[in-house]
Image (cartoon, rainbow over all chains, first blue to last red; front, side, top):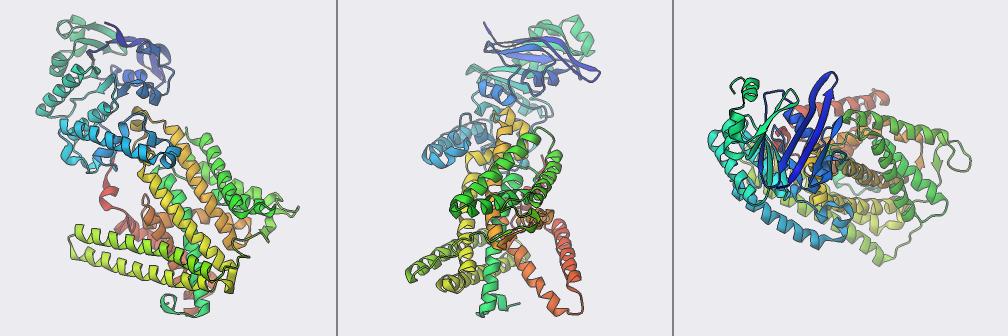
Length: 252
Length: 381
């Protein structure tokens, strides 16, 4: 049971505020791992540090054994670790389909010279990409909207788009930032089902959530962060009964 | 004013040729800027600098004996490198800083060419003239002239076909009568203008020897503009273009999906710069004398105006914006004849005021420009 992602001693301060204070985390390969903590605990900052959208002041992040804390964010994505955003960010003036097509990795057509020198290969790749995108859209129930502008999607649909887009990259690990926030209960169940479905196909997940039902139902292991520091780690049941956690959450 | 559309008087024909050449050149300028702003979201307020770099590089190189085509491509390349330098210096900063630096960079170029003596030890402020112009010594036989006329007709024919397509599509998708009338009126007017352009250019090609300089430039600039248009349209529909659009919408998402945003922004600046530089060569040939004062910031803002007029983010829109901009200039230059008691300087000022008012009105009642999509505009993040 190896760790696909491990972070050791991550530190980040913004001015005088210590957002993350020597925090550790480990995601076992093939698992669904949760990250919880009260508001302001530094969870999203932690995600940003893991994916190097913000540079850590100190600490090490390893993905599949290689250090990634000095890599640029887009290179980390290419290695197989994709992160989503807390407020779903749809590329508004592109169609839903284009949003997904963008996510395909290693596209020949994305290199300037290839546009002129390899049109046939690009056309073929586009077709394959399109087929896969339609499959994913179908599985998340957005296929009717494929050719509509993504900006016209509702909040819940944008969440699904975020996840679908992450899946298009054929990742090994997805960092989900509050996938159930602001979403109706039926859709939450659907999202959980998709996560489990993709997890069975080999994708590992690290999920930030406030919704305890989601955490309990999905996660193999849960890490608790409070005030930028590790507070506890264990199975969902252990965490639910941990006195320190309950104190930090004040009954959340 | 209708004489421009229908007259066959040689003076009018020459003027319309000049007009078409200008439209082609400014369309190219707009297409270069559109790649940077309309598709990638980069605020480039230094268009005049790119034009100047392309113009001066082309002209100086051609005067050393290099063939015109090579000089022109070299001019484009130098402008691309200018874009590269600009990008490396600023792209890691916030977008407003790019805007500020581009203004400064353009002024820098202008001051350099003003103070440096680039040719024969003559001071830069005098400008450069006497450089070779495209097809100036070309003496085409009757078959070649028909061929040239045919090529230009091909360009205009294609434009007309596209217009018809657009008109049909819009009439189908629009419900209310008022908009239907607007679309039809615009299409008819557009068709008229295109046909007129075809007539004038055909006559010009068949009578090539009457004015080789004007006709040569007309032929080259229309063909070049058509070529640039096709190339840019291919680019923006490609996966590469899709990445640019993604960066325009939300660059953090692009990064999260594995795209090297910095590299693509540089590419956009460079390719857009290359196109602007090539247009700069034509700009120089059109003026036939290059003065530093030709590259002041009003050139930059004129290009921005025509891009916004037609609908930024739409290449056909830019071409149409260029046409409208120059047609407006033409129609209003006669204003001074109609109002002889008003001094020309005031008329010119009034024309500027009027175009400003037009832009304001556009922003209020039709912010998508002529060809933009209203829904697209209101889609926030």
